[in-house]
Image 1 (cartoon, rainbow, N blue to C red):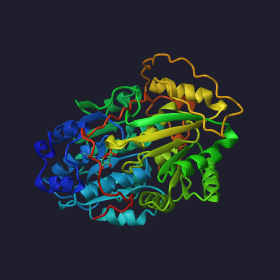
Image 2: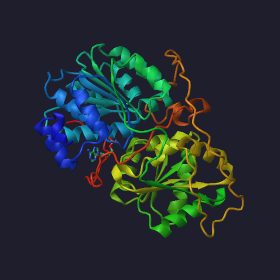
Image 3: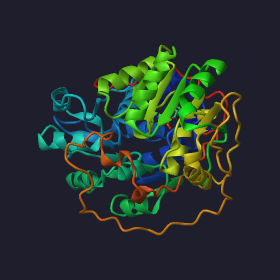
Length: 455
Ligand code: AMP
């Protein structure tokens, strides 16, 4: 199948061709005709599968036909959990829609609200938003939804994890009942199905990945090491392997700051990216990382979620995550679109339980390799035998329970940042086989996560 078979008009096809895509990914091949036919869609697909174009392209096609947006109205609303994702989606909307006469903008917390209010004044065809800021703007009469045609809930599972259920419920109550709704989630967990019940109507269901496996194109490895030697092992690995573009994952913001300083001190150009950093600092760090003036991005899980960097070769888990499914999300940063990548984890003896949890979720034992000079004094215990994954019971979502405190509006600061035991409920649906059916499909231009998508 090619993009010409999908019923997209010439201006959109031109933008796709300029981006260098030749084959639609599976999610695109399935979602685009369904959306164009006016159907609701419920899709299980992760970042990296091409899902953004999967919903953006047909939406642009639909919007190019209808009535223009009136002042303060939005014809399409795309809700997503984090600022970074919002900025990236907006960038995609701009790019795919560049030969069309449509207006789009992006709004999220952590930056001034007034410019966003100004941009909304003339009305927009596509509004990309994080939930809290969207509600703030609604409360200030900056945006209305009488003309809303399409709603997209992107990364719905993450929005639930981050405690946005209440905001989503509120937003849904503001939207017209007659609309097209597209729901994207990494997995169809029982919670997501419960959420979807009241939102999508007779949806086309699309599931892109088999259950609980990690990217086939990513080579995974564990380096057993003592906790106090992790920073020097990381420095050694970066220098010895001449790694130039690495994302290092940490559990805490404090840990990320500390490690960044240690790397800097040993002559490695690093920047931290997490929820305590201003939006400006995060955007700058990401841009520097993409252009190569920073080689290491030290990130917490939420801050890194959805960061889209073409062909990132190297991911390092400096610490294993508390929520094992986050391991799958982390290593999803690499090996995209058929490119090969490597994900290494520095694991100390204390982390054996976390390691066992990860291995349970991915249903395989990760190979271990001890680096000469970094042999652990406290040996990493043997891995537990793999047990089969059990299906989880459906949990009733309580719509009225307050999900997060005021002021935690922008996503990264939400309580869900550090998921509790209660929140350990992804099902980790995540294989990324080459989604584009070819090996050279992602040789595209650079992305710049600049937040202004206003035309
Ligand atoms: P997404 O899953 O939307 O975050 O997209 C992941 C990456 O795949 C992005 O860098 C896109 O630019 C790229 N991409 C999306 N669709 C295609 C396609 N049909 N062919 C090649 N690359 C694509």
